[in-house]
Image (cartoon, rainbow, N blue to C red; front, side):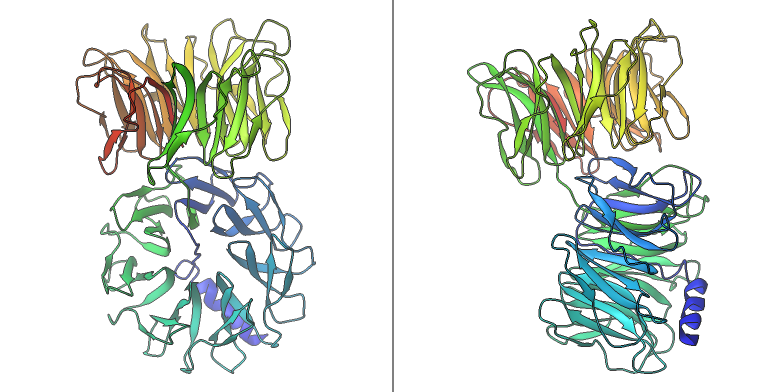
Amino acid sequence: MIKKLFFIGLILLFVLLACNVVSAVENTVVWEDGRDDGSYLYYKNLETGESSRVSWVDSMQTNPKISDNTVVWMDDRDGGSHVYYKNLETGEGSRVSWVDSEQLHPTISGSTVVWEDNRDGSNYHLYYKNLETGESSRVSWVDSMQWNPDISGSTIVWQDDRDGSNYHLYYKNLETGAGSRVSWVDSFQQNPAISSSTVVWQDDRDGGSHIYYKDLETGEGSRVSWVDSDQRAAAISGSTVVWHDNRDLTNYHVYYKNLETGAGSRVSWVDSEQISPEISGNTVIWMDDRDYIGYSVYYKNLETGAGSRVSWVNLPQQNPDVSAVGNIVVWTDNRDAGTSHVYYKNLATGESSRVSWVDSEQRNPSISGNLVVWQDSRDGGNHVYYKNLATGEGSRISWVDSIQADPAISGNLVVWQDNRDGTGNFHVYYKNLESGMCSRVSWVDSNQVSPAISGSTVVWVDNRNSIQSIYYKNLETGVCTRVSWANSYQFTPAISGNLVVWQDYRDSVERVYYKNLATNEGGRVSWVDSTQQYPSISGNLVVWQDSRDGGNHVYYKNLATGEGSRISWLDSAQWYPEISGSTVVWEDNRDGNVYVYYKNLETGLGSRVSWVASAQLDPVIG
């Protein structure tokens, strides 16, 4: 027990210097966030910009970890600390273990969760559970203090006091049962991380704290950096190690090294306190105090150099983790004998095909992850269908015989406008594809059209005040109100996280306005005296169609930095832009017909999406 109290003291002393979490894949970040007057978890997809709170339960939620789409964390909703999980794609989630014990510091790889648990007495031991099979057991039956687990595949590493005064690292393979001590040097070894068969950790064998690594398969290992500095909070993905380091004497900064090539450097040269890095693939994330609001989460791609702050909400953000998604464009195409069908293309792999081979009129697609929704005439009239591009699964969303149009999707939630209530008005409906739950969003009998959704928040155009205004509703909390109380006509809303943009006629010409639903901050996006229409938003990036140069061209603006420009300087008509992450798609007539083009705002790369000679309309990217 004395060792336990001593170790807790060390943790409190170094809580900001040794707080690391790690995951298996890249591009979805989770973190602790103080914006709702507590400690709650938020996530953001770095490619699509989609962001939301992980759980809306009013509890203390800390220490998140993510693998693929599944987040695990510590939660005090039941009294004490227990481990919960949630799948961000399906919405499925629950408490991992219902044993009434203290459960701390979970980590996850694939479907296997590992955590510290005191159910067996005074010592904490490691337990694991497979979320798919339900299999669960203690990792090691040695009666020692077992702390700070990490897992990759079926291999778990942790720090253990079984050998006396120092903590040493042990590992175990859950499939084979093989395991042993990682290093037999009698030094203080802590905060291990693992990727495949390579373990990294903090070690005091040389005096001070330095990062060491070992390959469990080959036995190869060494110190990662021989610079004589304080090195802590190591994380690893593949052969790349990151850690925070005080070699520059002013602050801790994040460094990386590739164990195969030896290449490495400082990740960011801003002179701020940068701690608790994590890495997945080429994406590094860390906590950074450069904005003087406490710590915010920043990221950088080591391959492209692209990076930014993850969330611009001006409240402390900490303990991030990162995971992965795709980059798929969908559009309406008339290549098949003049009938409109929905096609898709994956910009990363080049894979492209028709979404549905039913010979019906298919229009207005929307996409989130691998899920595509669209308006379809196959049953007579217009109904909404969906398809999962990964599994091929799909069906009609609602079998009510009504006009269903303009669908939008975020995760498993689909929204659309529907006239089933026979009042002469359209109303907005939603359906959860995972649970099957379906309902009307607002029961006010007004005309409600053009819905959009991000996370659990729906926005739409509503005429309940005798003028077309933008309303929103959070499907989890039930909060519903008007976005802007300006007495003007408002059209075509779009939403990303808490940021809503729309087309507004208050200045006697269409202009694009925005509002942050969390902070109520907002205003006009561009003060150029031009017609601005059809906005789209992802994260802080807004795109729209603009007449300032004569004709229509696509412009963008970063709401956080103020940076912006025209997307393409070709003298062609450019319409109806959409954005996801840093990739913009739009309709363009430069080749004599209307085709879909794309451009990545970070790399500058772009091209025509499909070179088939057909009319290509209504592009969307997810």
